Image (cartoon, rainbow, N blue to C red; front, side, top):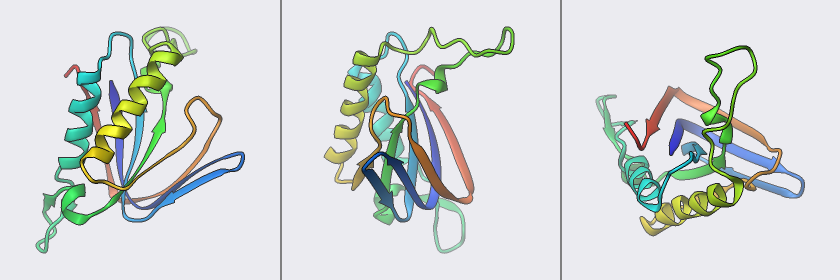
Length: 146
């Protein structure tokens, strides 16, 4: 499982009639790969919530999302498994099948909720517009297999 985490001042997602927004916190783009498990979802949810990428009074990365009481916007992103090492068209064969990816995406979201975080989501598998104001900019890549 892969997540691309962006620390934001605000973020939002829109698709059809669904429009969810957050204030200060994290926009998390989440990709599920073949062979990913519930343990991967739990591990990355815990890591995301506790990742110390918010500044303390001295401006040093020392606070987590839990510490700053930030919000989370989780957006499904199968293209995180795109492999463009050959040719010019990405290959997505390492991405999980949609039904399994949706199941693990929801487990990740539930794990964040279980940690007491306010979580908003996009619509799994939908064509979405994602907006964000990256704070820093700070962008972190996590992979449950590394």
